[in-house]
Image (cartoon, rainbow, N blue to C red):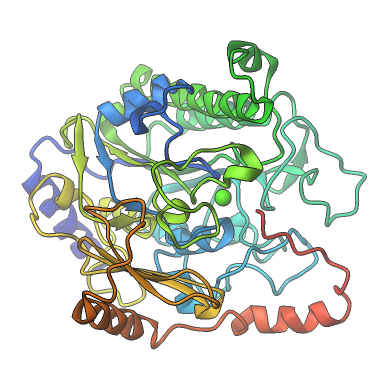
Length: 461
Ligand code: CA
């Protein structure tokens, strides 16, 4: 039965796109805390990203592409499960703690890696995990058959220190398939090299590669080569940030070159997104012209650079206007592997391919939703309208994003019927969501009151 469904799905795909290759590879490249304005294809004038710009040119740039959460760990929980992370009460950044079996992606959530593996794909994660560090939360226990990277929310770019207590996040072990491995080089380059090697070694079977760079997240550290290139940028933090972004860009260039060299480019769908908006003060990123930054449900926290490329199938040099989110990236990967997603109530995303090929003309979603801190802050976008409550202390406000991308003019008073409709959509979406204190987090909070009471909570991750 399963193979029959798979055959139907693949047949549909090939039927629509005569040149499509069955079951392409999927590479999802995620930047960490990248500002909305900080790549060439988003209009940056001081940071050069020729390889990301080439990627943008080869495919579609989503002008209303969103992260499912304004900070790291919950976004990754949504992406890796293909569901809004509030479905299972996941709204906090989990600390790095390999001895804590409670905290992390709930073990009863199925990851897209688990689903892709069943569909016959090899599955790899290179880079940052941030979904729990115990053995039960480890990527190798969550559907990945290759892991190279670190398990916490951030990492030093030059050092690993295995003599530190295991809860030290930024100097935590770098691991390859469960074994500590030395860091030889600048971390972003090391991840790029690992991605290139992985592609070379797995060129013959379909693979899913989740390349989760931690750049340009703090700590602000960059290689001299790029710091010298950016000597003209006076602000040292911005200079370092630019160098970190360009190192990431160079890595994307190496990945694309490898695909080209191996004749895999038209057999591989490549996505690029940031996991959330730039934290402008922490890393000197720039979210212009958006309001707010990482942590906010304003556009600056959630609208991100967002690309999809599949030469030969998706026409290049295009923009796509309707709102989409990172959960759709996960579900597109599943659909391309022949996994049935449309009738699966546990998935919230959809296949973006028929939308970007114009096979489907309508907007993919009636609305997109965000919820933070159990609803103290939330947002809903439907068409051009966005209703948001920025914090527990502020009233909700309505913005017309087509006319006012900077969310400057609150139109709630003039449009009570729109406010009521969007509130209704949000309430319906939120009705079955879990609170963050439930599931594993409830147990974790109990632990926090006792043994872990001295654990430092770092929301900057
Ligand atoms: Ca982040």
